[in-house]
Image (cartoon, rainbow, N blue to C red):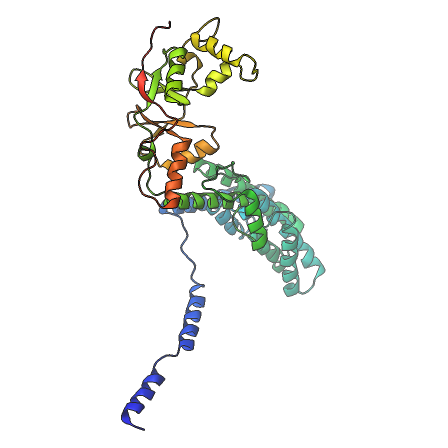
Length: 419
């Protein structure tokens, strides 16, 4: 063999083969799974968690010891070790389904009773302990009181050969009740809902094709594992993720970029006749109402005119509208008498995406835009927002609210004498 062939063979032998690289990478990924990702909480939440656990356990210990001394329990336990695990859940994870009051109370006491029964019926502690944990879980799941420290409770009763029924009453029930009361008070004072709400309020979709509650249920059924997060929180997290994705798609488009400006507006003392004439001349459907400093005090829309003209009775609608705008009879005569107020406004520096729920679920069709001094500077309509979304989705450049007709208004009309 030549020297060049020898060097080539040794080089091939020294170079790692693709299969070996893949195997090492797979082992490396598997080992990294043993090191969990960091918790997504800041220092303030970490401090809140620690202080709550310390206070909860300390108060429970003081009251439990006082009660034990008062009723003459000198040698029996007056506190259970698994309460420390329950405290971590109650104060550190108050939104977890495993930390809610019923799982903490029911899971702990039920498991103690199960442990006592298994201890009496099964002589072998090893087998009795295993059965106690399994039976406790089997009961906690259908009774909706799954609580991990409950497994420790069942095993503790078996290993100490204790009376599960008596232990369930004291110290277990007493300990748990005191801890739960402390958890309710402390979490409430520190801005955490406990017990945690099981349903989230209806949220507006942030994009076409957004998920529904049924989609969440289908995903949970497909996952088919216990999640340490409530269904309501999961739905809320998905909503926030979708909102963030939509915000990323929409970019940094602000209300100032898409509003129609300068806006048409009227003052409250303007006659209905003049306001109606302006709306018809400009082919607009709404007029913001402002005061002398251009501060928005209300809004008047075609719907307001229709409502006063009794739209439900179609016969003579034109006649009733003429009567209304001319101020005859007992009908209102000025814009201020029929305007809607207070009115929903948005600021120029707000993200345009913030208006989506206002339009889709808030019942609004026109949003006056104000500057830092709360003065009217523009109007955004559903048409303006839809045009912007279409441009973003299609990847076109430039803001969507400049130029072109829209349902919004310009210039301020001052009060005039009615003819």
